[in-house]
Image (cartoon, rainbow, N blue to C red; front, top):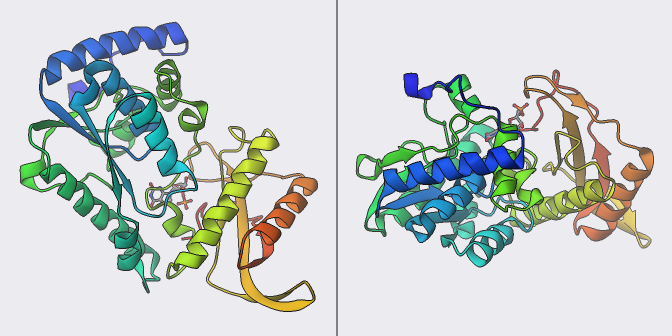
Length: 326
Ligand code: XMP
């Protein structure tokens, strides 16, 4: 238990110089712990796993084996960014797994939200296991556990993706960020050379777009969601709201309504936009977006995203709504 309590002497990492000192110390410790063995990491591209990856690459280079599973529910450009940053810029030993068809086939026709989550989590473990079994010499499993994970949910991060591995794949854990708070992880990530778009990413649920493509996921509706989400993020960037609003995203429900385009009747989906602020995700308030931005988003989404004829803005705080729709 005691090795899961942040040492009182540990200074808060608030500056690049303090981050460099932390990185140097951790690299030394990681080299000693890992020796000439290999370390496996499920690299989602989220803040924590990206910073762990960059730190381990600094410490042990290509002895770190990163597995990036594309389950088809990532946001537009995310798998490409993981490959660009880690394989191309950091020379990481990166295994990219295109599991899109596998996940979408398993999810076809499934509309119950918790069942969708379970399928995504279980399939993730299966894909990760398959990749792990192909590798010899793995002795460690790295995880992006951070201090709030320990404070909130016990010693090991309840990672939907790597929890519950079978006995032969239960490697010793490497958790170099386990005493850091999120703001410290970001300072360390920046010092390690990760781009702001990765280090300051808004929270993104493990099941990804799967819980925002409501009901049974279809490929065409998922694509509409991915495009609408990309437009929303682009416009938030342009308006200087990225990094200021806690979480913002699009949702596409499984309903259609009538509309009109070029003088012809349409029968298409609506896109629901949501932007919220919160401290701990237990309650949330709605961001008061400027009308001109809402008009621009509506115009762009209805003209650029196939299959969409309406845009709605969700004004519901938490409670009574949750942040996600499923
Ligand atoms: P709710 O919808 O419960 O969301 O108000 C609170 C926060 O949790 C995120 N969330 C999830 N994250 N797996 C995750 O990793 C999930 O299944 C999941 N469901 C919700 C949500 O995005 C919000 O930040």
